[in-house]
Amino acid sequence: MKSRNRLKQSLSQFSYKHKKLDSHMNKMRRSTEELTNMLEHMGGKKAEKKEN
Image (tube, rainbow, N blue to C red; front, top):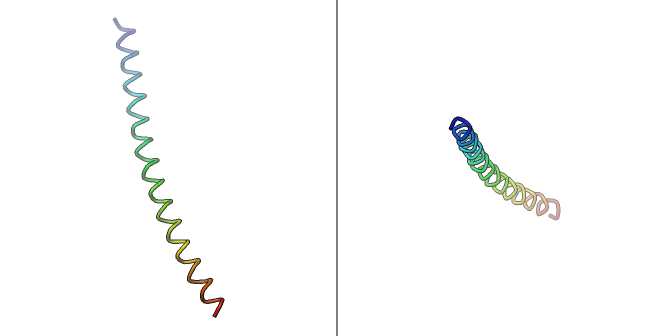
């Protein structure tokens, strides 16, 4: 009985940690997309100024 409880605890802890990791990765992914968009817009403005 104890080994089943330990296994169940280990599995639930593993799934909990990976759910949190997935959530953090999604937040990072969104942040990098926003940063990429900002940098692209900034780069476009600088290129236009250099041409003039």
